[in-house]
Image 1 (spheres, rainbow, N blue to C red):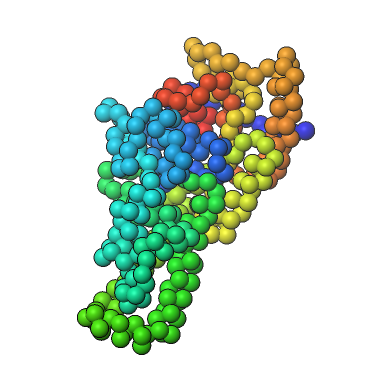
Image 2: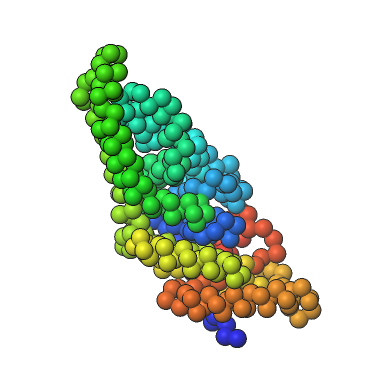
Length: 344
């Protein structure tokens, strides 16, 4: 069975790992190590002197644990002597703070206005709308991407399904606007009577809802434009060496290709091979799996070898990086630098 050839790098001072793209996004199914990769890449970028923000959009945040820093809901500097900032976006909090892009009552307020003030419970409806949490996160993500404090933004995305729904939002919004216009045309007379009765019949106000929807769609389209620009964005897919994870990663790369999102790198995490085969770690010993002396390790290595061979075939057009399975949790700067070197 063919193996993916890997050449060990010589240093823990990565340059390529931090990349040159303005925006680096890590995607994949839950639990494959996206947070670790994002934190390692952001740390390497900051150590190179680039002002970097690492953003977690996954509702099940683990960035704080990985960085050993209490990451808040707004960008905060991780260390005073390094240009590294971090933030964990809470979609529910984003919805409550911004209503859905927070302009003139936000999306929910715009929905209520669009329906002539008779939508009753529009806030609840908007919060339950498919993609509402992703759209609220988009507002904050775009805000951070435009923040002049940061030269690079590294994003730990939510699991695969959330990422794809984010990219599908423009079509969702188009459909919603069409349905709302049909609703207004059908019940327009009744709405006009109600709004006139309560003194809310101003044409400008009636159009405010559509204006809010246009603002939402404009922002989502702008994010999509950034994500599909290979000169600005580097989307990296993370998987573990198991067949189901490989197949999920393939589905993700295929869907991203349909949206025009450039994927250049596939990261295979937690490979049961000696760290020295991937990166040179001078003066420090790391425990490695022993397939020869451990039956469990040997059987797991067989499973991984099959998955690695499958990944090599499926992702031959991508730059495949391997990150060995470490005996200890990847928390704090030293192990993150080791991971970043593997990504070099």
